[in-house]
Length: 265
Image (cartoon, rainbow, N blue to C red; front, side, top):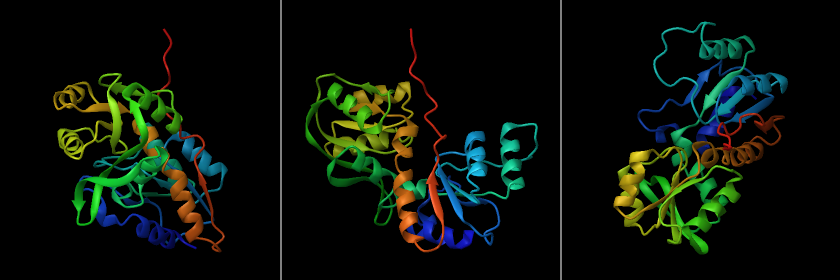
């Protein structure tokens, strides 16, 4: 099979027209006519994931976050970014990205997060395209306090770092989620309107917590990484099933890890 055929399979899962206007998705590096035997899935392109792709003889890396986001004025070895681009091209490794379209599609990133947290009675938050939504909402398997639920989230996402905002003893039975970084008043207001007592995302900033508290919404920051990376095994399973018989090996990066560490005082 070639890259173009792989792209067709990915775009069936995450149609490109679902990507938000500011996003950059699709084939960002490489020749769509090149053959593929090995695919590596990763949240990001990094020196480590490039070396992993080389070691695994991967001809294609499928990422969630685009390596090319804003305008590029030069690609040289003077920058880490330039060196990565050059190394990918020199090793004939293509890069394809499904970003906000993979967030929005169903099943997509938010559905992987919904399932990991064992939520029930799935609903949706913000409509972006007819029939498609950003974010999900559902009910917990049992009542929790906020502190209990924050610990539950950390366990289910296999992370040490979970920040939360609100009363430790607040009752949690209904949860709104949006993987990545989706903390704005529009999403907060929709979560409250649809009955959620807590909203889960990543990269929550200081002043955003104050706005959420102002409308009575508790927050859990489960990190950008952990709320999205858990979708990669689901994408790998999808590709493995759809490419069955094509002689394609699909693997998930083992080196694209959570960048934050637990601090010690």
